Image 1 (tube, one colour):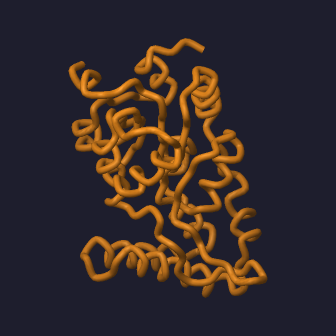
Image 2: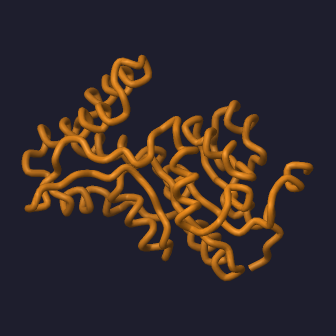
Image 3: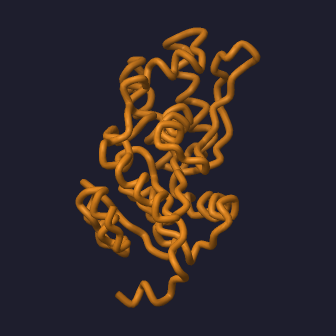
Length: 223
């Protein structure tokens, strides 16, 4: 466990959201399924992987597909679409324990803002960061948005988030579940992979746990 020796005293835990704190693996994919735009989303994903579009263009094309499928789509419509997306029971337990023991808790997700904001509110988490959607003065979705967190570049967003939290990267644990989380896992002092993950993710993380509740054991907490 030499990895602990290079860390300061752990003061903060930052979580990915999709697949970690909520059961759905992709909030973008969840909304695409609800709006019937999965085929378009898969095409956009391929374009991004092939390097033919950047992350903002990916956001633009995905949100444009939603608007074309649901003209006049508003923030409130999106909130209704994700109404059934709730934090896992163990998410409440783990976050409550962390806060009780004095840890700062943050969320860092490339998922859909309305889901991340909802999870932050329900779990009582002040610090969170996600790509921001854009809405007009009537609350209607506008294509595009603000890619404050980009897949594959989450380490950059993590550095900004922990500064807001008033802690250092060497005092932070990051918990994720996908290849897109690996850069943040490596940037944090301790990177934890949780749940049903690809072999590469489990291998490259500092620690692998099967369930979120095991994080408390990793940190030596009993709540």
